[in-house]
Image 1: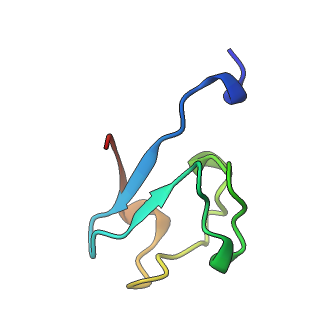
Image 2 (image 1 turned 135 degrees about the vertical axis):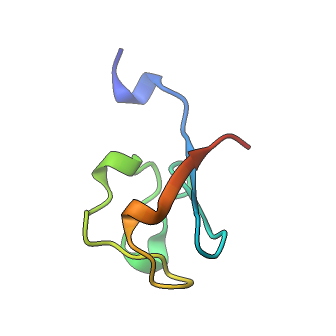
Length: 61
C-alpha cells in the first residue's frame, strides 16, 4: 500500500501538547501539507516549546 493510500496521522508533543497533523503539515516551519511524520527532518523541533522530534507520540483524534 502506498503512503498516499494510508490515512493521515497526528502526533502530539509530550512536553507541551502541540499537535502535528500530517495532513496540514506545519507551513510556518517549512513543512508542507501532506508531509508524513517519517519525512519530517530528524533535527526538527516543536515550534511551541523546542522539544525534539523524539518527544512526540502518535495519537488518534
